Image (cartoon, rainbow, N blue to C red; front, top):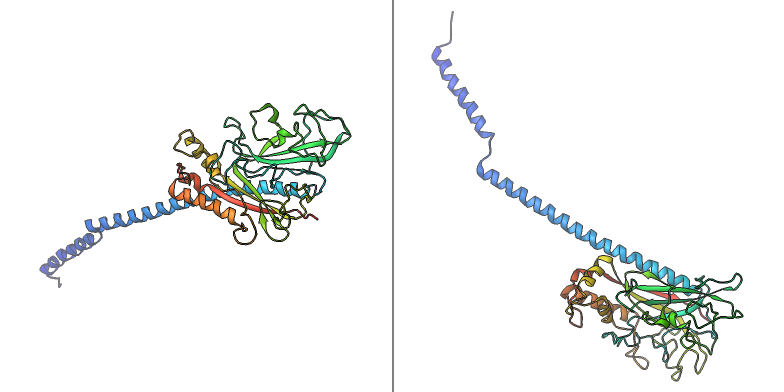
Length: 370
């Protein structure tokens, strides 16, 4: 019987053990490999975190814009309905900016360079066929189909919930044959025809066009907040000849005209459309500005609005006049400057994040006048 030599088998066993030992050592990681792996994982985590942060910032900014876009759309849609039903006649008055009377430029707003203790944003009021409210109630059969619609940014008192917010009023009117008492702000009253004017008839019309709610003769409970984020409101005219102006007629054609009714009864016959520009801020941005407004070094929302220029056309014709988009471009320039520097043009502090929440909108409302 032939057997394998014991020496050969003995020599093979250590060799097999050596192979297993080498194979076990090759399955492990060195310290350098572990450090490189940790470094790579750390870089990946940082990149993912950065992407998540950027996505969050983009989402937050997008949500802010959605808030302001929604408000602007609501305001403009409501205005579109009111303007579409406006009474376009030459025998009724419009409380709009023109050469004399209510000049519309903030009544002391100072060409966008700060408030002088009076209005900042524009106001307007006109008669329309949109249904309105009837203050003090009414007797059945007395209410007419006409109402007085007005828009303003409330700038009366910081204690007012509507302060620096866009308000709308729709005051229902009664028939002209109805006897009224104009000594009370809640009285029922009819439409007025020229030569009576909205501004000149006094109470109860005064509350509708007066922006000082601290005075007894200017309190009007029929105003409602329509744009809680709208803190700046300005309008101007697109004439039928293509010019944009702050008077509702061509100055070259009627250099001596004082109002839409004197000396020639023009009404709005030369106006093709009314252009409305608004500045809107989201609630978080407003809260940031309001939080610092008690400090003299910080700007209030009203002061920030004052740095947005009024639409004031240059005198004369041709070179030097306002062009379509000039006003909105100036407003955007103010917002972008504040967002990058944290300072208003007048040198007051504003949180940049608050300025980033402001957007500018405009829309042209065709009057379809004769």
